[in-house]
Image 1 (spheres, rainbow over the protein chains, first blue to last red):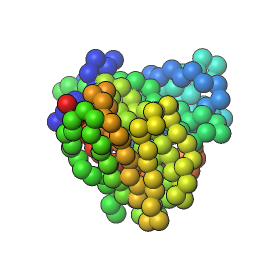
Image 2: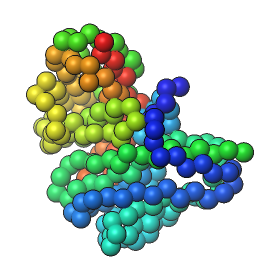
Image 3: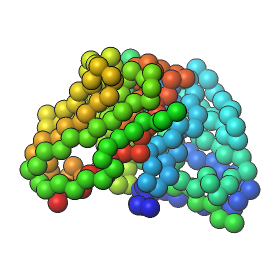
Length: 112
Length: 116
């Protein structure tokens, strides 16, 4: 299918290893943060979100960490699988607004 | 349950033409948002509608307009198409207004618009 994004930062990991995808945000007024996964030819798929008053949240095989001091967000994927190959976007919601601001994305490539 | 559905999936238009994109939200969702995704970039917010009222608008020209119908489906209209309007147009729905923790946006697979 058509590539979701060209010239994106790329993270290549071996199947079974853990993956860490990073994201920097700029707005201190962000209320919560979300990670989306986008496969080629598809729309973004919700993975996990975290409120601004939290530091960590865990889901199934995924963990999101929020460091408000340095305005940094990370997504950790445990035991990465070929099906995890996609472009990953972080998004922030600005408090008292109704829109999400998306980052530029990171392409995750999983090789056997 | 059906997810967010968008039509058409692909569309080719000529500069100066008009286009209408359609979106049906997940059943029970009252909020619909539209995003533009240019190749290689993250989605950019265009509009949000909740309960048929416009709740937010991104930094897009007046050539872009939208509306939401009583059944919560939505249309995005773009007039006087430019080459730069070529993009993937994504529709997303949620139960409550965008910006609610634990009420995430659910995206459709988009309409790929090519302007020649």
